[in-house]
Amino acid sequence: MLTRVRSLLAAAGVVGLAAAAGGGGWHRFRGPHGNGVCDEKLDLLPDGPKKLWQVQTLSGRGSVAVVSGRVYIAGKGDAALTVSCLDAQTGAGVWTTPSRQDGGNHSTPTLADGKVYVLGYRGMLHCFDARTGRIDWQQALVKRGDKEPSWGHAGAPLIWEDLAICNVGAGVAVKKETGEIAWQHSGQGGYVRNETEELAAGQIAQRPPRK
Image (cartoon, rainbow, N blue to C red; front, side, top):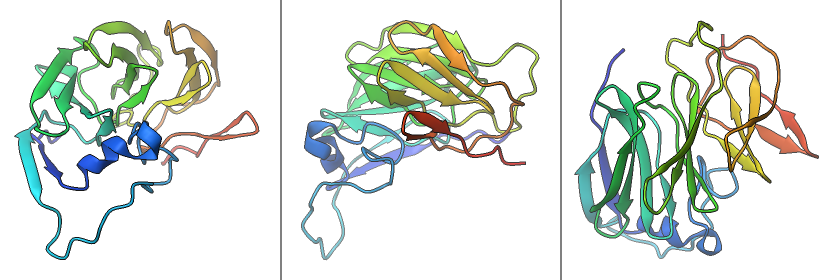
């Protein structure tokens, strides 16, 4: 698998995501409403946004979450999933925590109630403290020996009430405070796109795995 080092660039307006959605920011993949639309109103910039800073990040294919003036991004460092928190205004590092589990990351972090939830590409769900980077818990969502998708698991966790819900070929929900498995669907693991499940009337509507 090709690995690469990403360059994270912040521009004027992009940092505005930290103040979008009434202070909730861009806390998950595709934003506060899960539709890729930002509520922040920005003035038209004829010459384009001004670059504020640029930093080198770890290899990976996930996007960023931006909340309360902080940028959260996950990647692969020293063969382990690693999560970093940066200052949204300056790009300065706030904390970086290696999980020592799961090998790497292709998903986008999800933030809720002061926690950072990240699914590693081998199906391990991690919960970090958003302020300190402390690892609160880790939970394997797939069984050892299960078939692993060629490009790994990439679905961003979905937080709903007291649950963190992930798509690892079959839906799995854990208690977001402890990581204890609450329920799971049976099914064959497969390639999962970097998308969350949809909730409708309390029911999970999963997109079928890509062949």
